[in-house]
Image 1: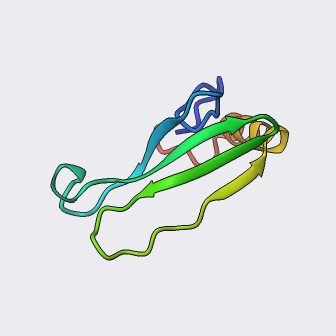
Image 2 (image 1 turned 135 degrees about the vertical axis):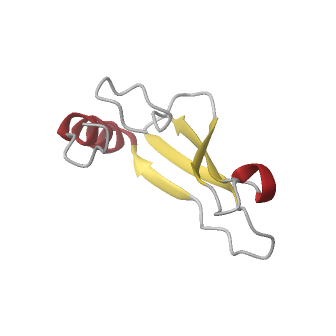
Image 3 (image 1 turned 60 degrees about the horizontal axis):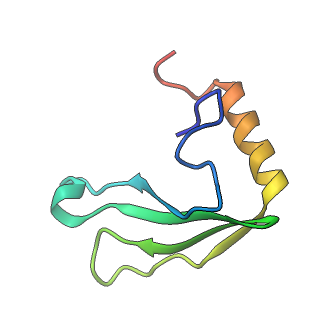
Length: 87
């Protein structure tokens, strides 16, 4: 999700992109994935239109992030690498 080059699926552009954040124990093909639409709208990054793997689950609210701070945090987390499991 957070490659060092910053070009991972969480990168926000003017084109909305659906990002799969997780899946249920039974697999996403069965019950669906937890996903969100990520899009840059000027100086704001918007996470919206959540899809939930279980019917009846409360959807998270729409989130808005300052675009410059969002980009900086993705770059910082991608470069940090302490959390990587493939290292």
